[in-house]
Length: 349
Image (cartoon, rainbow, N blue to C red; front, side, top):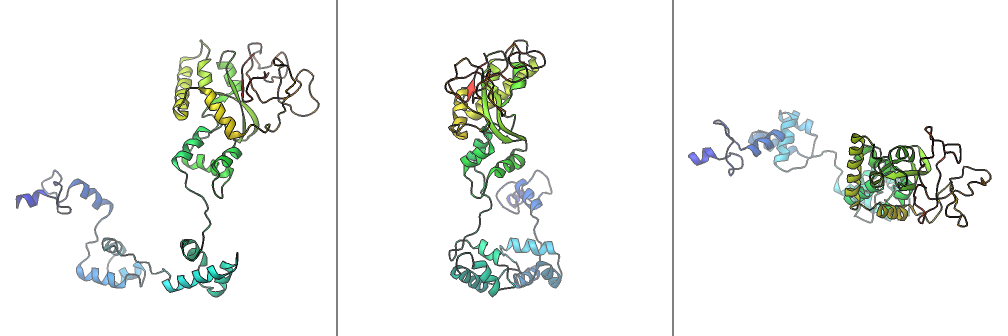
């Protein structure tokens, strides 16, 4: 008798909760709170099961004289599915056969003509494996590997290239935006680096820069960005300690996400994902230009004799820039660009 009192009255195995009047163990108490029992009498339970599937739950509760919650809990405890609005199996079978026998792209029209009072779409899309019917996949669920790849390419690869890389069914650039809006809930632009204007004030001359092609966040076309790993290696000695701590944390996160501390591996991956074999829009490349010739993106018009062609390599302003950001060699605040061995990076001259 003492052993029966000490055991849970629901599962009979675990000890009771530490209270003199407790009847259940802690897991059972939590389960009962989440899903209370129906407490229906045998007569009420029999009446509920007899009407299951023939009328709505509100109607069953009114006919038996119990609450709708008691009906729902009783059906759950008996493992009975009750939905009075379910279509008859014979009707579903007839609709599917007619849908499969109809010509291409005429299945729904034929079914609607034969069954005007039946929702054809709910049948054809629910039973996708019967009679050759096939539902339209609106959006596939993101896998863990795809989410990691999307985080790695955030702000570095254009949405068009990401959509081409993932090749998700019935999805384009909008699926990438939706992922960041609903899953990450943060903008992807500054996840892996900062812009050239900010990096020029924080880094020493010679910091490595990366030219990216983006079409997100209101920015379209080539932009220059400095990865956090490259910025950390070339921070100025007089940089604010708090700012240095922030850059260090971002660089550590970038190394953890990419599983490498070599920024060149990241640039090589971006080249493959973005497909730089085709020159990015708005840029032109000159193979006959001298290696030390400063070049910049062209904005239209005739070629500038001082800057012959625009290139796909990027660099940051050196110490010859004044406080306003204007460079003495172009006088318009443009970023001087030096040609490098790879088309996706360069160094400050």
